[in-house]
Image 1 (cartoon, helix red, strand yellow):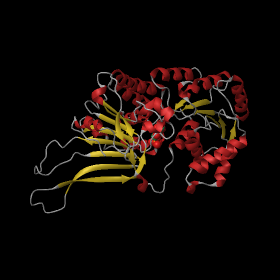
Image 2: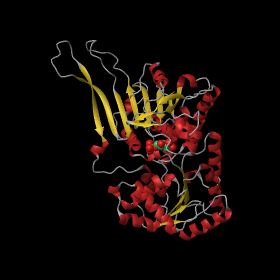
Image 3: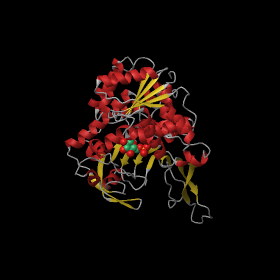
Image 4: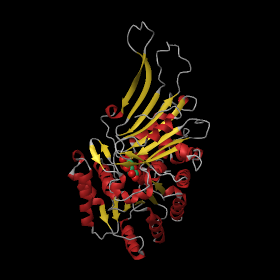
Length: 486
Ligand code: BG6
C-alpha cells in the first residue's frame, strides 16, 4: 500500500557519477514539472567535506551539464537548490554518522526516503547506522541501487543486513529499466489489449528474442565492469526483468504484490543452465578495436590497460519451463560496442498451418517487435497481397504496421526513468521496484551459468567493436533454425 509521501530525501553517494548524471537531473526535471511536494527537502551525503553552498554549486553544475539546454530554466533550478542541503558522513565512522543523524532529525518533518547510491558494500553499514540512530523505523524507506551483490551469497548477505533494519515493504531495489516508459508500455500492450493474450503462448509463438545492444564501451567504469561483466551488469537485472514482464501471467492488479508474485514465478521457472549446458546454450564475447558509428574505438583490453577474461557480450538460449512457454526458446543478447543502440523484444509467431497459395508465394511468419530504445515503437509484421494482376498466382509481401510512440504522443514528454522511480518511491509504491526474492532467484540462475563458464574454462570470444558479437552467437540460433533480428 502506498504510504505517506516522504518529505525528506537523503541521498548517500550524492557526489557520485550516478547522482550527477541521472539523479540530480531527474530531481530537477520533477521540480521543473511542478511534481515535487512543496515540503520536500533533499539532503545529499558523501564522504567529501562540503558545505551546503558548495554542494548546491555542484548540483547546479550537474544539472547544467546533464539537462538538455531547451529544458533548463534558471528559476526551476533555483527552486530545486533551495530544497537542497549537504552533510558529509562516513558510514564506517560512528561519530560522523551520529552527526548526520542529528542533521536528519533537524530536517525531518515527516516520512524519509533514503537513497543508497554508494558502492553496495556500504549498504548494510549505512542501514545499520541509521537503525542504531533510531532513524529507520516506520515512516522511513530505503532505495537501493544495483548491483545488489555479485552473486547469490553476497546478495543474501546484503538483503539480510538491510532486512535487520528495514522490513521488505520499505525496501525499494532499483532496476532503472522498470522506470522506462517503453518497459511500462510493454505491460500496457499486454494487459490493456484483449487481442494479444490468446496468442501470447507456446501454441502461437515460435521463439522470443530480447536484445539490449549498446554502442558505448565501458566509459571509465572499467574497474567496476571488469569484476562484473555483461552477465552480472545487464542479464541478472535488466534482461531478466524484461523476460519477466514478457513472460509473466496477467497479475490481478497493477500493484506491488500482484506484479512481483507473477515475476518471481517466471524467474523460478527458468531452466537451469549449468556446467553441462553452457557450451551449447550460451556465447560470450569481448570487443576488440573497431569502428562504431564511423568512429574508430579501442578494444576492451586497451581501454582497461590490461588483458582480461571479462565478457562484454552475452547471448543465450533460455527456456521457461511452464505451460505457457513450454518449448519456446527465449534468446537473450546484450553487448557493448554493438553497431547500434537497440533495446527490443521480438516475438516471432509460428507459420500458418497450411498455405492456400501457390508454393512460389513465400509466407513469412508474423512478428511483433516492441522497441524500447532508442525510440519507442511497436511493429507488427503481417503478410499482405502485393498489388498487381497476379497472372502467376497471388503474390504476397511482408508489410509492417508501425506505431511510433513519439509521433503518436508528440504532445506528451517522455520522462527519464529516475523521475518516475523517485516519485513512486517518495510515495511508497513498490510496483516498479525489485523484491528480494526476485533478486535472489535471478542471482541463483546467473550464478549457475557463470559457474559453468568457469568449470569449462570458457573465455569470451573476440568480436570487433561495431559488430553484433562473435559469429558463434549467430550459430547458436541458426542451429535451431532461427536468426537474430539485426
Ligand atoms: C546499467 C549498466 O545498469 O545500465 C551499464 O551498469 C549500462 O553498463 C546501462 O550501460 C544501460 O542503461 P540504459 O538506460 O542506457 O539502457
